[in-house]
Image 1: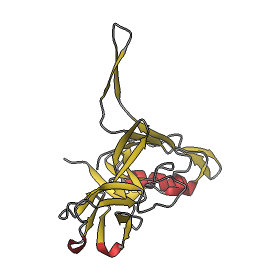
Image 2: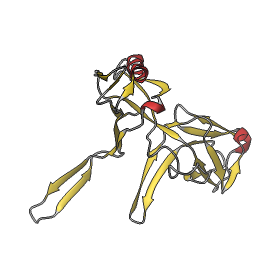
Image 3: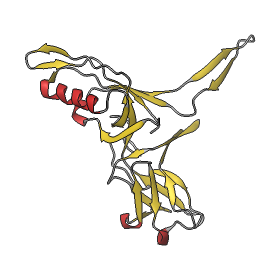
Image 4: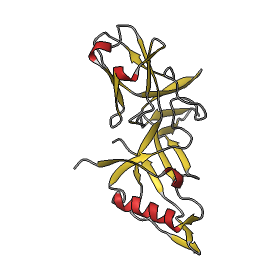
Length: 213
């Protein structure tokens, strides 16, 4: 059976203190001449997080427990906000409609997948954005902002679609700005609560792993 996904977000107030980030898989072979052969095993990075935190109130601990039970442990995926990387641009700036290039118009293409490019002078890597946040997606065509009434946003699949009368012309550059969540699941079927103080306690570790919804 296909894995399930719930369109709900892990509570933001409970994710303070999260650690983690992207993981890649590279195969490295040492050659007899002293050089290395390196091979990329994964096309894309996979993010891992630990949302375990310090002392929390009983209400916060219960909120984590209830969220875990509602997802049936590792069975159902959910949204998680990466505290460092959750916008189309830098985290300290509001998204701009020109942040990320989605593609070039053909005159007939209406749907564009949301992507984010990480690049410098040495190279670049693209990431598909599967879970944009509703109400945050901005579009521009050749640098001119597009009114929200001229397109729709698929927040489940991570795409935008222009209405038939407003499809980008051939050669027009389509760009976007947005906020987004990471699709994850619990990387455990067990949550351990430590009641370390009066009416307070902690959950030492809450491992999360990115998934393809």
